[in-house]
Image 1 (tube, helix red, strand yellow):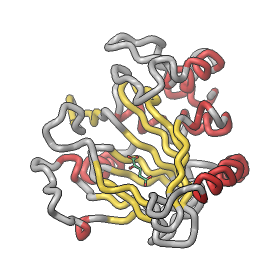
Image 2 (cartoon, protein in one colour; image 1 turned 90 degrees about the vertical axis):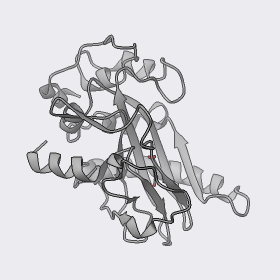
Image 3 (tube, protein in one colour; image 1 turned 120 degrees about the horizontal axis):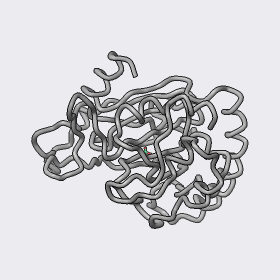
Amino acid sequence: MTPEELYRYDVNGYLLIRGAIDPETLVRLNKQIDVWEEKAWKDFEAKSQGENPEVRYDDIVNQEAGLLSLAANPKVLPYLVEMIDKPRLKSTWIAFKWRGGETRLHSNHTPTVTHNFYHFNGKIRHNLLNMMYAMHDIEPGGGGLKVIPGSHKANYPRSRADDVSDMLVELSMKAGDVLLFSHDMGHCSLNESDAIRRTVMYTYCTGVIANSFGGDALYDRIFNAAEEGSWLKYLTRQPNGFLETYPQPELGAALSV
Ligand SMILES: O=C(O)CCC(=O)C(=O)O
């Protein structure tokens, strides 16, 4: 991670990395995701009037093997290593947002809870770092993440009565880009276009934090099948308080993932 990237991430709470998926892989993954979109169409059409026109499939890496490679994408590992102490994969999902599909403004930062973004001993230390991949272009109005830059460090809570839409910055993306953001930064999205927004999300936490759901054994099958010493194996290890359950590889091992 360059000093420029660190400065921008620290101040803004997010960083857009272009071309994090190479074109060939992007085509292959999108073919696999087409099958999910067909399924999503059925779930979308089964929704009742007034329901959020978004279909999301959680724990996607246990269901779609192709998407496992992005969990330990060598392009993003330097950011994980720099900004999370003993990183671990926490949750994954694929999401399709039709026109009107939205995620309301939220963040972990209140700013009075223990999982706030922080900087300690010269390092950014996340408790929840999200990586959102755009699998198709997300044009302005197409549901790109809208963020309140810097809000991960806010010293006062946001008033629910305050609309704050004037503070939002919408982030468009190209297919294959990945958006890294602190879940402590205020964020939301709304698709106002006719294109279906197609994204895959990977969230990472420090090794002491448990999975959101599925228990400690959520990734056991992936862990057991992963190559010894690989980043995929490390990132899918079980949490165990402050004790490591598998040694952290060197960054160079990323090439063998
Ligand atoms: O899919 C989106 O637009 C928002 C994702 C989100 O809110 C989150 O990762 O917490």
